[in-house]
Length: 287
Image 1: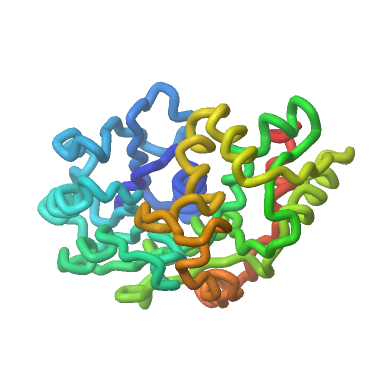
Image 2: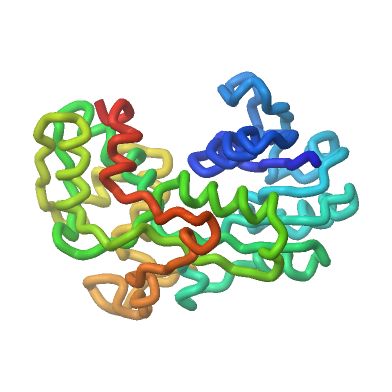
């Protein structure tokens, strides 16, 4: 068995690679820059870009299962090439917002129509997103500036997403399933900041700011923070539409994303990791 992991250097992808290697299977890890991948030596690192499907032929050779990072624009062609190369099982990374009916995912549809065995992995918000929006200010000032102090959020550890994906890649019985993945409970921003401080062993202050100020701060950071600011702060809905309410989010029903879903434990046999565990795992990233 040889499994191709696309998006192998991302938060989830790295954990998928590690989980598969621990299971003793052959792993080929796809990345745009193999020289900078910093993946375990047992992984075969292959160059390729999901936005350029023609670059994937060498990486697909001899592969029979694939973890698919979603790139909507090229998904159909990537999946067609994979099937032509002999890939018979595809596990794709999707989102819990699809379960909630907030939008549809064309990658899911393409996977289902491919004729491959398929499993959709639909996580809620990534705990790891906080590394990309809060870590700079925590490292520099030991402070988080953000709105929504006491509103509950449903977040998941990237390792739990990977554990479910690994199980679906290796085990039978997951074909045709869509797993909605959440943490063990909802958690507020104030509680998250407190947990980061406890992981560091020192105080991290929380400063409530408006959505507008938070957007300014996130845009100034660039990268993921800038790209995701409007969605995370409610200035746009899933699908890119602007909400009619000034408060944001009002036009969509988020109740399904506030539920604690049982799928992590159902698939893996262990309960999902909580935010305190995640903060401890990433304490050095905030330090």
